[in-house]
Length: 90
Image (cartoon, rainbow, N blue to C red; front, side, top):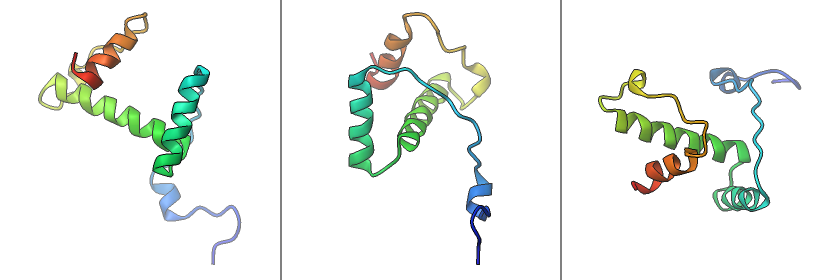
């Protein structure tokens, strides 16, 4: 029997020991919460799912599944248009 605070094999398999904060407007938070409610997932789960989807699309676009071919993600105002290209194939 596991006592309080003991880690199970599942927790050790994929530890999430890094915290990331993000600034969002009210509408984005409401959209995130709606996704969480509908999918019965936590905010972290939804955000991690979206990050994985974006990363998978980047790998697919890079060809041959190579992470090394990826260019650094833009930090300028073009980032929203880059995300639109990924999700909406613009």
